[in-house]
Length: 387
Image (cartoon, rainbow, N blue to C red):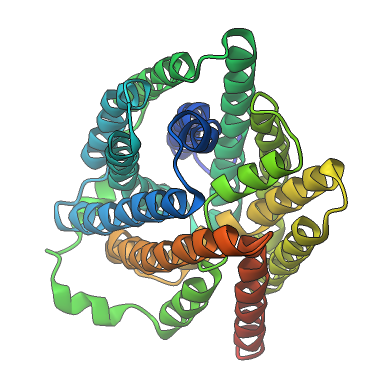
């Protein structure tokens, strides 16, 4: 299926999208079970879980900052993507061998750093090979396959755990898709030659980033306070009686909605106003938080999961497209680096806040999510009026 104008561009886009699918599959095999592994098998509190999640995600964003900058400075995306992919494969066994909170903390942190190393260059790579008129559909397609990988990974985690009741076996099996992703990278993903045609990178060029880019970052900083880890979704499901083996299947439903929404929404946004489509996604997240707060029984938790998945499908790829179209070709890695730095700081604060609220208030994390999403919605609404 052709998404981009030329055959070479399509081949490169499909390759990086399928690599993302495999990375996502490997991650979900671990992270769909990790919250219950920590709280039940290792007796870690929710507050400590929030700290682990927030710190790990923050470190991933810091790694994205440096990798994006380096990809602009050295005019290469591929080598950094491969480095991060190798790290992800090597680190997965650390989860299987974990014996306490600190071993999981280091495994989680190192895994997220590896993800960070590969993510910003991969985002910039898509912009390198994609005309501006196709940014929405390209990023939407990538996110669709990323979430499809979550579906497969979550389903495999659920099946293996249901058959064996063995967390560690699932974590060992997560190495396999990571190895497959590395093979695809080595064979089919190559740097865009036009990247080397630009002059040497310098710090002063950051001031060339457009005003609109910085305005979007302001909204991202607010929204990411509400984008706490899916671990809190999993724990909410557990509170309502969902079994450990079934929780990954809830994430499968979440991911199916993402996978079937992101690409069509991206194509729609290419033909209309991106911010208006994005605002609709924020309204969906507010509704998701309300549902998860007032849910009368376990089946409403399923609805909450599906609404969260719909929100991510409507907004995650859109953010990447808005960043890509509001920067300059030779500063794409830098633009995504700053974007991830802002996200990382907000997610660290958001996860720590969610952990504290969850520990001290029933459904507390989702009250925080509703508040911060509402503020972000007002901000982006005002921004849309100033276009």
